[in-house]
Image 1 (cartoon, rainbow, N blue to C red):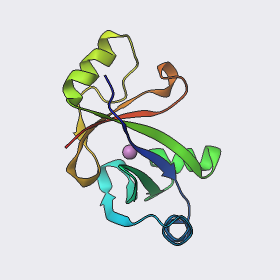
Image 2 (cartoon, rainbow, N blue to C red):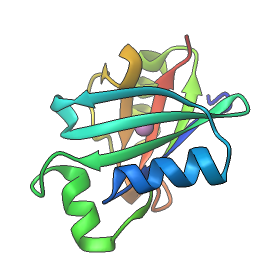
Image 3 (tube, rainbow, N blue to C red):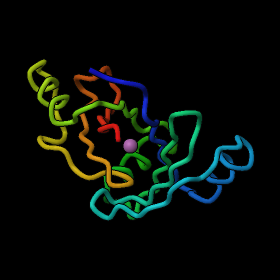
Image 4 (tube, helix red, strand yellow):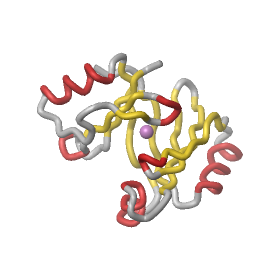
Length: 133
Ligand code: CO
């Protein structure tokens, strides 16, 4: 069902210092920066090998990432797996009885088609499916 890990999502309170850590200290190239109003985040994508790190700064406190930060503080937010067909992967997840956050795919960072699975039936991990492209 899953290909490689596409990215890990990290919730950050201070985007500039998180960028500095990942670029200056870790040496990861910053490849994309985007405000995704629909998800209430400013997102930054960095390359690490064939995968990415996605830094997520909430646009306000009442967004999902804003609430996550308030409850748990900065840190790992989700894991994203690459899938060949996000519609098919979502259907398999539904058939397997997994709890879905997205009933249908939505547009994620860099125009990708993504869908989230609820941590409740995903081993406590907020899980994102990303259609490989
Ligand atoms: Co993500």
